[in-house]
Length: 200
Length: 403
Image 1 (cartoon, chains in turn green, purple):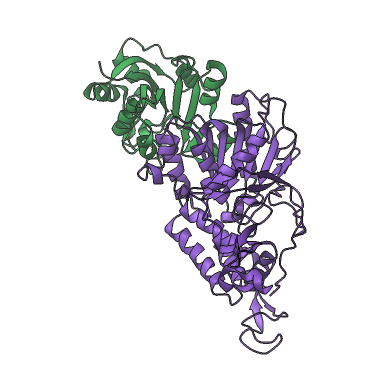
Image 2 (cartoon, rainbow over the protein chains, first blue to last red):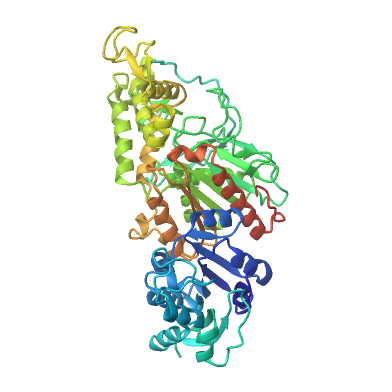
C-alpha cells in the first residue's frame, strides 16, 4: 500500500463507515476492512479495476465522483475519501460539497501545483511543466482543475469547511517537514492530504 | 414443424403445499406444487444455501441433464463442484417458477372443473390460470426454502427474469437474503421489453392451432406461433456482433420444408436460406418440444408487470430502505434487451437506500445471453462476490480462488 494511503488509513477511526471515491484496485478499502474493521466501500471509474476489486470480494461500484455522489443519502458515511482525484473531476467544488453532505469527514489528497519545481519550470521554460507528479503533457492530461495548497485552503475557507488535519507529502509518500507553515508546504510539498469536517 | 407435445411421463421432483398461495391478483392458488432440484449439502447450521432463479424459458435443471431435451443444464458451467458457484461449499436450490411447465403449478397443471351437467372432470388451467407476478414466483420459492428449514438464504442469484426474482426476494424478504446477485436484469420491464413480449404473444394467438388457448382439445399445439415467439425473443438475446460472427451472410441450401417456403430444392426465393434463418428455425422448433404456450404467455406477462417502484411512487429505492443485504449488480456491455442503463437504475436505487452494493459491467459482445456463456470476468466476479460475502457472513475462510 502506498504511504499516502497508509496516512489516510491512520486518519480513519476503526469500525467506521468509509466511502473511497476512486478506489482503484481496492487496496485502501481492503486494508480498512481487514485491519480496522471498517464498513468500507468504493467507487471507481475504471471498469477493469472495478472487476478486479469485486473479484476480490470488495464492494465497489462502477461510477465517478462527478455523477454518482448525488445518489448517496445524507450522512451515510463517517469518512468519504478522495485520493489524488480532486484535480481531475469536472466540478471539484461540488464534489467536495457532496463529500461533506454524505460523510462526517472528507479526506482529500491532491498533487500540489504550487510546488517549487512547477513554478520554476514554467518560469524558466515558458511551457507547461512536467514533473514526476504532473507527468502528462498538457494536451493529454486528465487534470483539468489543478490547484495549490493555498488555493485549496482558500476554498475550504470560502465554503466554510473546517480543516481538522493537513499535511504535505512528497511523491514517495514521505511526510514533508512543512507542517507548520502553509507557505513552505505550498512551495515544497508535492502532494497534500487534508481531513475536513463540516463548518463550525 | 415438429408438433410433438412434451411427454408428461417425466417425473419431476416436487414439493406440495396444500395450503397454497394468495397471489398478487387476489386469487388463491391451492394446492401449489413446486418442482425443484438441489445440489451440494446443506450445512448443519443451514446457512450455506444459494437459491438460483432461472430465466423466462429456463428450468430447475441448472446443473444436470435436462430430462426432456437431453441437453446439459442451462448453467452447468457455473454450478458444480469446484465451479464458480461451488457445490462443495454451497447447497444450491433451483426451482421451476410458479406458472412454469417443468413440474411446478402452471397453466398446464390439471384442475377439477364442474361441467354444466354437474359432472366434475380434470382439465388443464390453460388461459384460466390466474395472472401471476414475479413476486408470486418468489412467494412460492419461499415456501420451498422454508420447507428445507432454511431461515436465511446465503445468496439469491439469477439472470434476466431470474434477476427480477432476485430483486423481489431482497425487496419482499430482506431478512431472508444475505447476499443478492441480480444479473442482466431490470427493476421494471421497459416499454421496449413489453413490446417485444407482445409480438411474441401475438404470434401465439395468430396460430391456427391456438384454439383460444384450449389447444389440448385438438391434440395439437400452437407450434408455429410459439416457434415464431421464440425466434423473435432469441434475436433479442443476442447482439449484432454475435450474430455476425456466428453466421455473417452465409447461405445454405434449404433441405427441409418450412411453413411459408416452397418445396425444397426449388429454384426460388426461398430455395436457399441464410444460415441465421436456419439457426432461428432450429431454435424455434426445438423450443416447442419443451415449452408450453400458455406458460409462455403467463410468464412473459409476469415480467411485464414487474416494477419495483410501483408501490413506492415510482421510487425503486423504496423497497430497499433499511436493507442489510449485500448486492452485486452485473450487466453486460452488449446487452440491449436489459442494457447497462437499467442496471444503473438498480444501483442508484440501492445507493439511495444506503445499501452495500457492488456494480460491474462485463465487457462482452455476446449480448444478453452472455450470462449463460463463457465470460471469465463474469466468473471471477461471481467467485469474488460470493467469497467476500461468505467472509462477512463468517461462513468460510477467505480464499483467493480464481486469481
